Length: 266
Image (cartoon, rainbow, N blue to C red; front, side, top):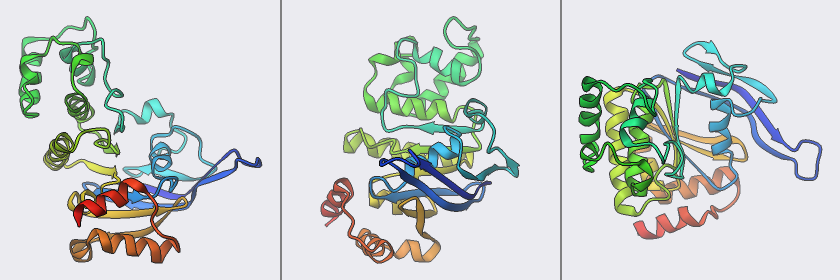
């Protein structure tokens, strides 16, 4: 279980550029939940992920993982329990290393010039075949030669090779074309479900926010302003979400990508 207790974070405090990014935010994510997170630019979504990962010290509050207070734990140690994918497919894998070497690194076997046994190589091929992209026949190829979609799918596989306690997906399909994005989302759904991974996914695709997982959060000004699950969530449309945002935030949604998603759905 992931628990955030009254976390606060302000950047550039006491200056004209002061920005309160997280405001007394509390959140409990039970083990196995798949939570989608939406909100306008600057709502605090990526800052929330950085707080969970330990990318900066909090002003106040605490982060708990499986009943353990990890607030003071450095980022590199939390990374053993927390997997993360970013919007940029170029992050999360080593371009000059082969697919096999990247997987060896993810499997804790070293990476470049590491010893990969025949059994390891067989396991890598089996997992790559699940991607449906033919990468199992290209294991000696440098990752830098892959397409964005192939590289993001590989990064997803690497981040879940040793199933993390928590998986954070920071708009991990936003840079992909619609067809490839859909394939990566379906792969995400499959991997998270099969390994029962606790997952939080930031997305600007409001339909994906309702279709994927079992819970949707809406953020604004560093707070969670709407938290929906169950039957209520199953009845929501993207038009409902925009209206909820207007009611709860007191302003209209002005994120271009989210509005384009609504227009396409219509």
